[in-house]
Amino acid sequence: MIDDEPTGSRLVDLVCVGCGRTTAADELRGTCPTCGGALSARYDLGPSLDRDALRAAWDRRPLNVWRYRELLPVRSTRSITTLGEGGSPVLRLSPERLDAPVELWVKDDGLLPTGSFKARGMAVAVSRARELGARRLFVPSAGNAGVALAAYGARAGLGVTIYLPERTPEAMVRSCRQYGAEVIKVPGTIADAGRTARAEAPPGSFDVSTLREPYRVEGKKTMGLEIADQTRTAWPDAIVYPTGGGTGLIGLWKAFRELEELGALPGPKPRLYAVQPEGCAPVVRALEERRSRVDPWESPSTVAPGLLVPSPFAGEWILRAVRESHGEGVRVTDREIVAAVRTLAGRHGLSASPEAAAPFAAIPHLVERGAIRPRERVLLYQTGTGLPFALDELERAVSGSAHPGRAGVAR
Ligand SMILES: Cc1ncc(COP(=O)(O)O)c(C=O)c1O
Ligand SMILES: [Zn+2]
Picture 1 (tube, rainbow, N blue to C red):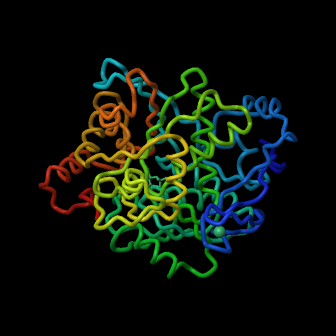
Picture 2: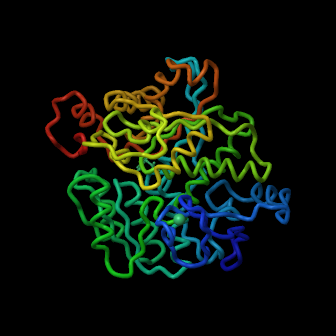
Picture 3: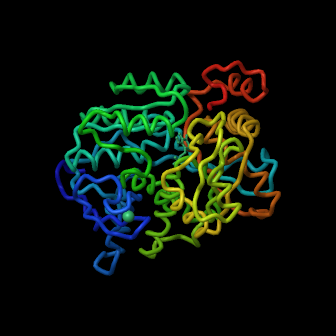
């Protein structure tokens, strides 16, 4: 990439998901100025865009987040802050080692910089925030988003403050500090960390909380764009995704909608299944009960810290993505999650965090209830590496004998 040239971004404006108001895109902005809702980036994908030239340009570039820069918000290549994110492999699980009669594939984002899919969102959000003049950023995080922000902030030369729930895995706390971020631990869940962050963040610092700024989800969109490029001849019928704050799921859906508009979708849009742990399943409950909004979950608890999100900010947007895709919600127990961590590692050679293993744990449920039919092709999104977690501690936590250690059930 040349150092300073236009990216060719087709970004037009931001549309509020709540009230529909449009807002100018080229100023630093978090949420809708009218109703406080989440903002969704809109691109000009109309007839003035030469689709063949776009396809050819994508095919010439390496498979990573920035291959798709026309569908990303960053205007100048000089603004791009990258650690080489994206381009994770899509692997087929050996059929003879599976208990279910479905074709399972895994896209493994545990291999990305900082060990999770959060790198995609932070690469784009940090690049864009810097382009629009931000000097300091903050985020409440269950761990992975914090580590990613710390790394990309360091790379971009921006100050970073991270608010972590007290029981965040120590490896993630250490990592944030190692990248030079200021770390503040807060009792409770990410909801408490978020309240503290918004009340106490250093003056002038920009909030990159999940869906409270418009561009992390744009980076997550590249998951869907890559899937379309990597599975042209093995296009999935369904994608199973672990859902906390919902950016991953929304990003996938946005990718498929935009590809459809471009006439570049290899097949029908895949059904999206949102997986949550039984101890914190506000999105799944809203889907099951056909509610129009996601009500807060009381007394949340799970071994998967990234899924301990009792009240996602953009709940209605998540519900819309799952429903429009003709998908569903699915609950898994912590015990099933930990068994899936063990199986993915021992039987398939894949290192998965508890969140990342949840989709694998959901498969028997989806097959049993007929949501996924025999011989369908299913892609499990593996969102993060298992490295920060000790399997024996996870197993103790779900066997009931856990004393409240670091990997104990987060509350
Ligand atoms: C590994 C992992 N998977 C999934 C999630 C949930 O992602 P989202 O907030 O996009 O729903 C998180 C969030 O922290 C995570 O760290
Ligand atoms: Zn609004």
